[in-house]
Amino acid sequence: KDALAKEMEFMLRSNEVPEWKELNAGAGAIDGQFKTNTKNVETVRKATERASEDIKKADRFQVVMEEFLKETKKKVNTMLFERKQALTAFKEAVSFFGTGLEDKVEIPKSSQEFLKPFRTFTADLIKAWPVDEKKENDAA
Image (cartoon, rainbow, N blue to C red; front, side, top):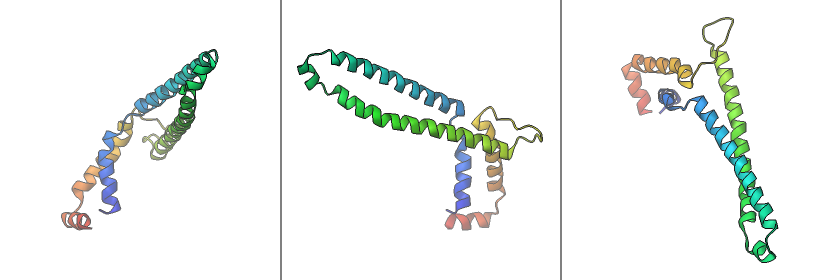
């Protein structure tokens, strides 16, 4: 398919995009849970320090968890950074396309509200597309 057909197909599927509030809350919950788990691992580490040398030598929990938390922290930080970038990009897109008000740009209440005009335009464009050109584009 050509690039235009792919873009139109993507736009029509955009109603499947989760709401920003859901994504934001989910990212916040993951971050909060990660912080809680980090504190819990620290509590276990302190308890292990008081254990006998035999237990300390046999216990691999701390070593495994330190590596896991190190890797997970990178992923959580990446997620939080990408969340911030997504919000910035969303605000820029809203600002660029505007809301029809000359003096004020309002952030739509939902992702669906923001994307609705684009989906409507795309659906109307597909309906208006000449039949012969549709077949030629689909064959390409």
